[in-house]
Image (cartoon, rainbow, N blue to C red; front, side, top):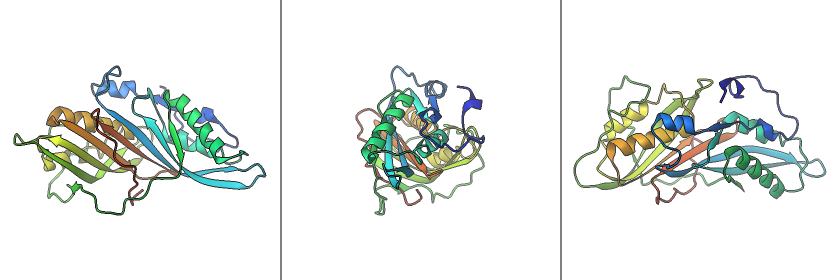
Length: 271
């Protein structure tokens, strides 16, 4: 991948016509190799669920149609899709006349699948906003003095030697930065597991350690998964990050040990 080819961080002409060539896929292998993941045997299952809030095209008589969509890229796809290129691609439908919404969604699914190298699911609409209290314990109120903001260091991660527990922890303090533009990416992260009790103060220090770290959303979640798996030795582990919206899109990467069901698709109020 040549960083100069990425549409992030440079002026790109607004697309006037349907343009699947705007999609910029990024191989996952290099970033995964840096954290010890072998592409031939992934230690997790998962997906990257995108919410598209700004989707439009013209009907056959030229009248604008607006829609929303949920896009699901499997974690075992060889490539992720860079976010600005996805935004530009979706905007390339704005002046296109299409016979139906089904035809638009079928085209998007085919183009994203070709870019990712695996079948990508595309459905109309968005999952509901979660307005009910979750069975998750927030770790954000822990009273800590912190002076390390990146790169993330797994050293603070630790687990008790007592009886195993099963719990879900949540933090709204996850922040990382785009590796190309340096712009901030904000997220809420949920960590569900069964195993030795994770030290919450150490976990919070670790998550805050992403604050000055530059990495794509999907890669951050995989790094958290691998570090927790190695340091805390849970019997099973599930991690989902819900990133806030940018350019009409938000992304929700989820990674879990094989056999763990995915969390129900939801959106946060921040999204």
